Length: 447
Image 1 (cartoon, one colour):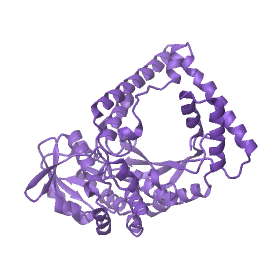
Image 2 (spheres, helix red, strand yellow):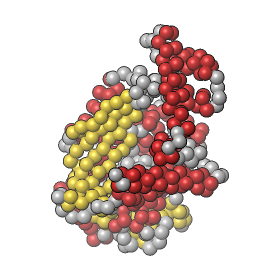
Image 3 (cartoon, rainbow, N blue to C red):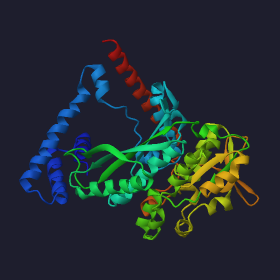
Image 4 (tube, rainbow, N blue to C red):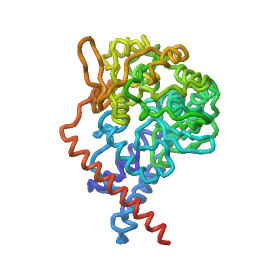
């Protein structure tokens, strides 16, 4: 529980201070079993005083300082916009984030604007590739699985750019009441992947979430990966060309499929996700030199095939055509059985298959090395399609990825009726953030 956020909300609602203290006191005692009444009362009073003081930032007369201390409010929450849910709303917000980052891309070969799996800059190794992934939010209580899958995800994002991963870094934030064993378990999960693919974990950071302000035992974390391309060119999405062939390896899922298995009770499926097949396939491509014959690669993660195909079409300005029957063959049978039994769209969820786009003359050699199968082709156009018998169905992301837990089914996948209005408010908040950034740069340069 975020005590600071709780107190701020109460003050903004004009709730009397004695009521805030009374209710906050009770909540602390409910969660922190090892504290007495005296400590709990002092603690909530101290938080109230801190928040009251910091809220005065809104009254500062210095306009520059006032701008710095108050973030631009869109009035749209993360949940309502579907951020993190790998759908249309999530993609929109990430494109807005890229607008802020745009001015930093002076030497970037692949920047955030392209919405690719990782960013690339040129260096002595020709290219340095970097990516970071956040741990699945529902794996807080299962830290080893969280560490394993987020490490694998970060490495995937580096390898699909045609880079050979050379290092991992981690960032662990555990709430005040979290058992330290969670940190060790999470790290062990990272290292299981690290050792399996021979990429070292070289550093990171370990902190509490919100310091003293957040009680409970929630774990929030991320893993980053660094890779290099010593020879050849990156296999970025934008390189997909008309006439290319699309291959895919079998995908057994990662953090998302693990979460589905955990919260629906299909526990045996978790074993299917514990592999590094994807990374081994990429390492084989790099080691053999065949990666130079690959036009583009990606992992099927961002909203499933629907999301990734949509983004590739948008970036490369081509049409990706997939055959449904062949695509379904790339999903691990046990994973597919679970998804279909639970009425979860396999095309709208992360299956973690490796998608390889290459020239027709190189198909057989790459298939043999990676164990992939041919699932489609690239043609002229700007949208992707799924061929199902005599039907040609547009592949577009839903507002959210396929609802893959009971809670997500309650939240739903439908786009809000006022989505366009929401986008305008979010866009305005992004414009304000850019203005603030430009203001600070001006202040720095004027000194």
